[in-house]
Length: 499
Image (tube, rainbow, N blue to C red; front, side):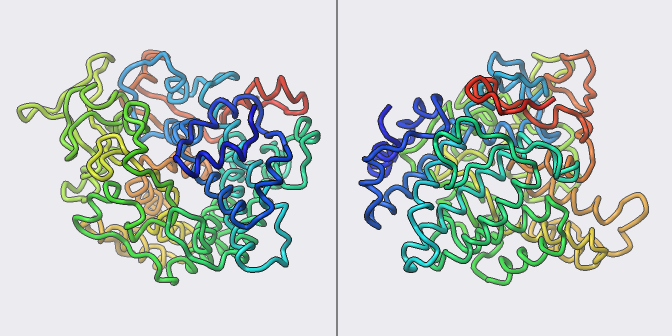
């Protein structure tokens, strides 16, 4: 196997993230060869290596699998037909110890984390600002990777975080020998590690680049999310405030909002951090959006298979809730397949499922299956702050932030009179998160971390499990997280398995 940083040079030059795909299947800790240290002796070499780390996020093993693992367990999607791929298992909660998607994601995430370590460990904390900038960006990436991993493979923070197993912590101090026998840290330890990395990243980063790069405000934004997941609501508010008050970002409005995901991501004033793809980096039928959409470049739905597989739809549950206000601008992210005024159904299931394509992961710059996945954006900061204030009993403040999002969507706002014993302020906030952040990999986590179940009472392939459209996954169910990949446990006997 060639060394990782030889690959990085090629990635940075030709933006070909596929060069690392086969390597990441072998081990999540790349070999440390002389060529690596040779490249990393100069600041330009460190910059090149860091660009390579960003580029590797665009690999199918990372980008697609992150999305599938985070999004498919939610109640806002419906699978229209069984597939021979592991995607069906992710959707149905019939997880496998040798899940192809979970294994590829686990390996690729640690592969990138280990690459960040090679740079982090070479830059002491007292280094000049230009070197600390590089260190800070890699710290942000490492934190993001560990946070995503612990959400997927470790139980929600609210459930005994100091005893429940999280994931291995791969820091710059872990040698290659130790990595081969590393144990899983607790959920709390992983969260503490993530927070420490993000705080240091925010200190190190002094140059605010575009939203395709780690920035100080991106670190603050991710801290807001992490603290919210920990139910540390005061801190969640504090860091959301830092992002909002920075005035670096503005909510997209009107037509720009309705085509939010279709433009150049670096020109989007609301994006905080996105994985940018150019027009030459279109995965076409292998792209995330291919499973969600089949239609033209303007968002008009066509028959299944015309431009993409079109097998994952917006659920009837989500669409009906969104359609409560027909003027809701977020309906522009849904492309129902309508022929001669009639909503079309996928009859491969009984009962048949309405074909509500989702175009949030498509149509960038007029390319049907091109997308630049958005990981952090300003709307989430308002909703993070709203949820945290709801839990701090700051009801009016929570409503104020929810109403910012509802006003942008063009639907009626709430008053204190709308908060009742049967429709709490937390209900209101979580509903708005559902409407606004749908298909962005947050819904299932929002429910489980708040001790709420995922309830599927609509048609989809989950009905083929027991013949019922009703599937409920409780937050304490073993299935809310994935198995540690068996291939990794075969290599490392110290990796315990999830129940």
